[in-house]
Amino acid sequence: MDKIVIEGGKRLKGAVSISGAKNAALPVMAACLLTGGWHRLKRIPRLRDIQTIQRIMTDLGTAFKEEGGALEVNSDHLTGYQAPYDLVKTMRASILLLGPLLARCGRAKISLPGGCAIGARPINLHLKALVAMGADIYLEHGYINARANRLNGANIFFDIPTVTGTENIMMAAVTARGSTILKNAANEPEVQDLADMLRSMGADIEGDGTDTIVIQGVNHLRPCQHEIIPDRIEAGTFMIGAAITRGDITIDACLPGHLISLVEKLELAGADVDTGDRCMTIRGPDRIQSVDIKTMPYPGFPTDLQAQFMTLMAVADGWSMIRETIFENRFIHVSELRRMGADIEINGSQALVKGKDRLFSAPVMATDLRASASLVLAGLVAEGGRTEVHRIYHLDRGYEAIEEKFKGLGAAIWRESE
Image (cartoon, rainbow, N blue to C red; front, top):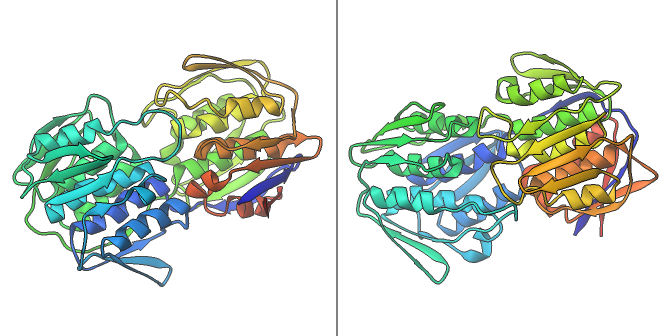
């Protein structure tokens, strides 16, 4: 097992390119199960979660090959419809295979998912929607068993906006009989990216990017070529890295329009942010100002950037309040930040942060994907020696070569074997 080692105190300077979005790549790969032929996917990031879903799909009979910097996917010869516990337990997004397998094969057997320990992310909304579309679903021995000769369109109302639920039902609905209307749907960029890919396959989808998505079922789909959108969470992590180190960096191959809420908060914190069509320049302030945030569904402040922003507030002037409204356990990184000198008090879904002049290096342990990134950011400004971030397999699930990218910006950071 590896660890990340950081010697803090270096200002980040230079340029960094953003990888394709993990949370867009996973549903796009799952959508390749809907029809045979060779799909060509560009900007697929090299991440542990990508490897996991590729292994599951390979076990189902899907073929993969890399050519010209793209990942090509062919599900002509599906041999199974079951996603086993041994693989699914490591990644909750495996549930995205349920919709396309049920639509294509008429059957699906998916282990109840695992993944980061950041709170309950119930899949009952997925199952309720599929039942409304005519699926027969039952749970047995830790597996979801689903059957349907052909799904029927239905009016679906999600009790809460759910990204994977919206994506799963979109994929299930594209070949269902009649029309499906998803209300209170998630409108994240990753949902829109999946809709773009499905339209390239011949699907009839309207309304993505709003809370009402209308899908008219079609009889046939075709393979397509698709380029994954840039990872807004990776871009946001580097933006916060520039601010916390008082750095000056340019972020290339990104979509600033996906990060408006973060740009606003960083400017309030004193950073200077210049945006272009597909790039941003961020200059950190001499003195970081405290800013309150509240996580919300898109286009609100992303829950996936809450831990990183908390680290920024830990070295800001004054007090800040951070409210987490998406996942109830997403403050589990706080105990590790406290080990580095952060002054943070938790009260239910709120964290009160008193900014300190400095953080101090310490050995810390990552508890989930985004918590890992927050600890790396803390290490970039920590004083007094080396910060060691352990259990970085979480980090490898969602960031492509993050230590190399930070090193390219001037950070003293490297990977070591435990």
